[in-house]
Amino acid sequence: MGRARYPAFFRDAARLETQAVELHVYANQAVPGLLRTEEYGILRAEALTPRESPAFIEKLLGER
Image (cartoon, rainbow, N blue to C red; front, top):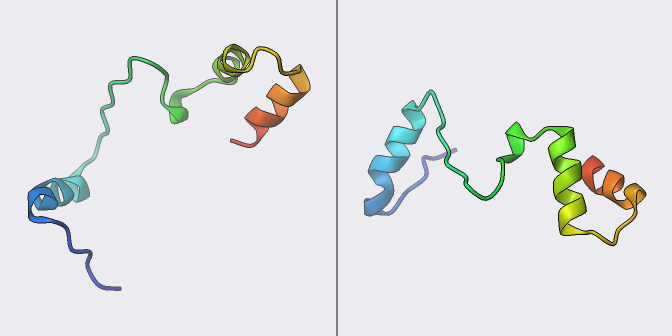
């Protein structure tokens, strides 16, 4: 497999990404997926789909 070619403005970022050992994310609206607990997922799904049944919410969370 050949190396990907990036636009000039992104080449430094792509190079730095290959050397990264940590990921820092600022998300003020929601918790990033890898950090979500089951309880958070349930509460968020209920808030976004208030008319759905608990069975639907459970199915929705099981698919993620």
